[in-house]
Length: 470
Image (tube, rainbow, N blue to C red; front, side, top):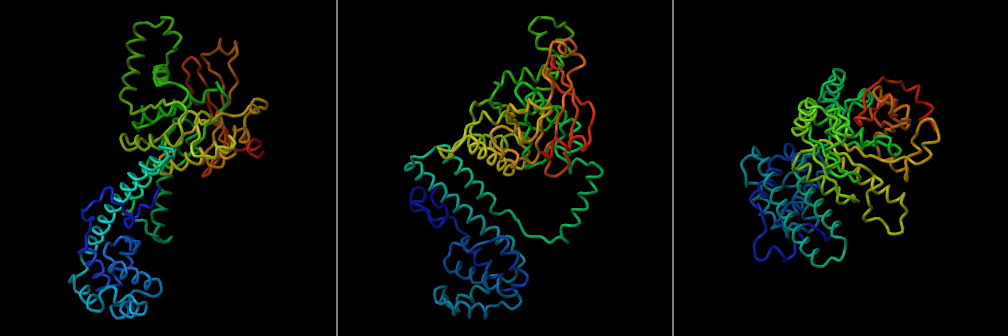
């Protein structure tokens, strides 16, 4: 993608129209810097991070010179005299209009009281110029490019997002300034206040991982037909139905109709086979099915069943989900069905998966929401008593990029278990990696007739030590 700096705006969109500008505000900002450098310099430089924010060439040179001086000396010794000497020494004084123009700028504003307004005007004008530059380059790229269209769209979205973040204040703070908030966070955490924990899964794992937290990549892995989709839907239903939080699911394996049917039967605790066989009573239809339908209809759950989704398509769709519905969690079912875009054609599948997981982790941080990524384990997971991290299929990068890795394990249904399905099938959820907390095992019960998991009991870290130390 071509350089989208405002200095490189092409003619496609601009024509003869003047670029957005706020020259008077530029003058006012520099005037404030000259009037009271000790009070205004650090504030201005924390928000206007480059001379490129200015349109006037003289203002650019003056601002760049002041920024350089601030790096070498304290604001108290910077004034119009030292600035004049600095500009004169570099040969730039005549280029900015000489001492007369500096004296003029010094008297543009009588006070620095409105410095925030001046800064805002300068930033807004620069953002508009940046948008015009980006759009102009987009038009040219669309005419000239023979590359991947989805890659172009993704780059465009990232450039626009970077422009919207220009006026976000990301100032550096000392530990002392942050300590009060840190202590309050610990107090709130000890009191289990909702503001300090992630989205509740509804299972005993919350005591270990403290919920699904923003920016985290949580991997749920299992062998086929063990129930990873069922468990993920259980978590999503708990987040959206019980707590009213918007959730999005990208289902690469099942269609949206199948997802809704499974959600409905699980919520109603009705066996889909009984529905097909016409065994439901009128009361079950009226109370269980219709009641569950009403609860799910009110739940903010959004489904995308695009097959063979690429990471580029995922990012674009997820951004729109976030913008349109303010989703608080994303579920992806599942990684091995995604296709890689942008990787080297000679890359191995392991390298492709590594790129996919890196892209998904980056997306979680960009949207500041947790992403629950479903994965398959390799066949070696069936040979031992329980799976471990080394059984993650196709790439060790999954383990590396994930903040939390959970391995779902249970015995497959046998005829005897099917006959005793009311009690359910004993299952284990192994927290094999937890970047910010403990590992451990949660014992669950799987009810196959409802495709639903329930809590059973909790096991300490000592019982899983042999599994994690492989």
